[in-house]
Length: 134
Image (tube, rainbow, N blue to C red; front, side, top):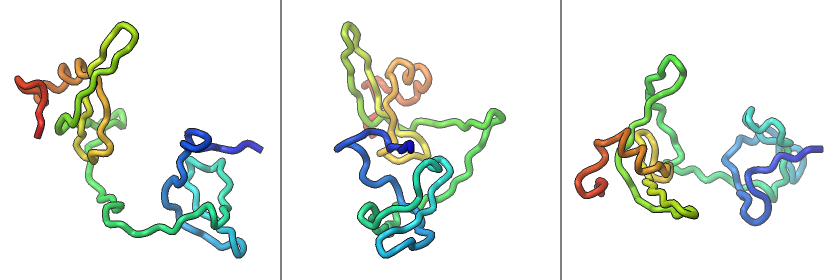
């Protein structure tokens, strides 16, 4: 029997993945969950000790927005601002990275991008000071 693990093993493995709907109660301490198609290798019956009750939070509601899809089924992302700057030191090379906040994404979904390619592709993000603070 092959077991599908979520990312890392041990202490750093995620405790809870995301909320799933309970479809039926199997016994006094086991429940069957609705598992999405990407996780079909996971056995869908869980002991109550592995489950946690979902508490409703208005910030969890995702409002659908219209996105213009291109013929190759991709869409364009526009950066809003630069959140942070770091320099990573490799053996004999320094790489400047920028944490970019993208349109239609929250601050926690900001991505680290190389400064050189970002400044070439999105020059409107940069000022004489280096990057926009606001």
